[in-house]
Image (tube, rainbow, N blue to C red; front, side, top):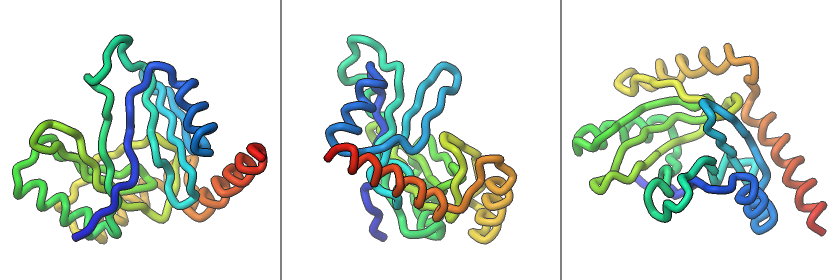
Length: 182
């Protein structure tokens, strides 16, 4: 079962400066931004196929060089079936902190590697809702039930759109950002 490395999240000192860096250096655009419990989170992408390729989390402790720098390492699977299979494997290996969730725009299984590094394996849903969003799901249920539960959840969210609509918006942002750099 092959999964693909897709994105990472890092804790940063200067959120605005880091957003400018990833915008200016790599042409990424902000796909979502949130402040929750005084925690600022910025999602950035360079592709309408990926909600985010990097997540910047503000509020990194000054002077801290290695502690709490990495939030997670994320891998993309092909389907919800594959995510459920990863979940079962993580349980069989007795990995720590296994969490199964939907972000509305994806399904994810989180766990820690043997040295405590947080890992995420996810796949996209056909829907979009404003991020960040996290709802715990029971991945012991049949895949059709997980899918139906998720669809009901996202359709009830005021920011609900089809993923294709969100992708068109991001493509427009990326085109404008590219044109502005010329």
